[in-house]
Length: 335
Image 1 (tube, helix red, strand yellow):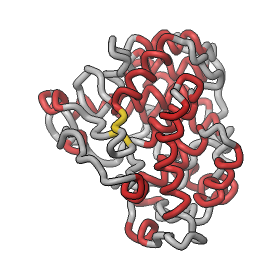
Image 2 (cartoon, one colour):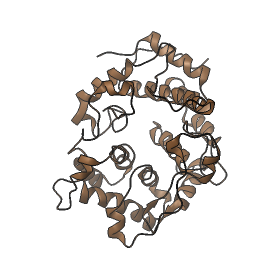
Image 3 (tube, one colour):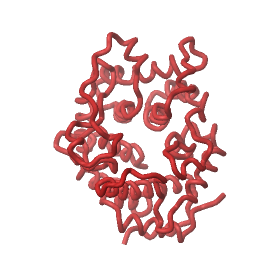
């Protein structure tokens, strides 16, 4: 199996050190240096605002105030740590308060993850605030039927990951809607199964369910039921023509739904994940970074955002390759 060479690892490392922010270098150091959870959490805390929300963690907009979109990124870091920070950690406490405050019971979900202020700063066209609080839904049936996992079920996953600090009634309400949505509409054995989800839907809900929500549940039986359902159509949203990723935004098997060999989907798509990981590995640029393959835009501000995107993607790619045992590297840390 092809592995990233020592030479190419060092190129990527040097690119990160030369161009990365402190969160980029801290994430790299955590995985390829000291592995100190407390040290990483100290750096992450610098991005947390007084109200518990995070800002400055996105490479798609320059607004640095608190928003759910950056808080999602913070949750991703925390959930991916080898050592789970205790629920008593100040960052976790403040973060959960922010997340629960943003929950909207009338829709059984979170709303717009962006804030109006973002539009006043440089931002990618898809990261523009477009609306306010969603209209209330009639009842639980509608909340289950219309559940939107994209950019939102990640917070239900975080609530599950730290369920001990979420009021029990609220926790059960939060997870009820995504759980019932999967059980009813994603299971091909259900009378309410929606084949259109797989024929016409986008990959985002699937990626969020597989990568963010189900792995964080603490009920093993429930996790097992949902896992089996999501394994029924594991490639439905994966782009299997890998060459399209050279110039377009597509989801290869290794990109989002399966980012670790520990993923419950990995056994079902192992060969495709391994092959696409090799393809991605070979896309590395001469200077060590992994290119996006397409442009955010031509303005100076968008080029600046894309430069940070290059760093984020490079760190994330190295972390993924390490998880799959696909790197031949020397543990030299950050100079």
